[in-house]
Image (cartoon, rainbow, N blue to C red):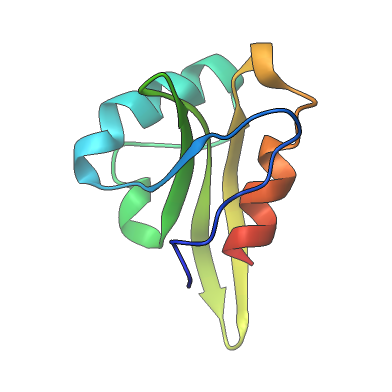
Length: 97
């Protein structure tokens, strides 16, 4: 995975980040606001999670959950409701895939 390539989002230059265990409290808050489905404190342990920060705040994220052979499930696609429609989710999914 190339984590230094920029994520292109219409009209912005967000900070993309590799999410770590220390980000879990913010990830839980974003998941609570967006309700992507089952998401718990240890979900990050299932695969790589990436996100977008604006002004230091986590505003979008997605990650990997289950893997079967050469297939990986993309999970927890979350975008702050105020930013929906800006291309955050599509950019993160493309980057992760």
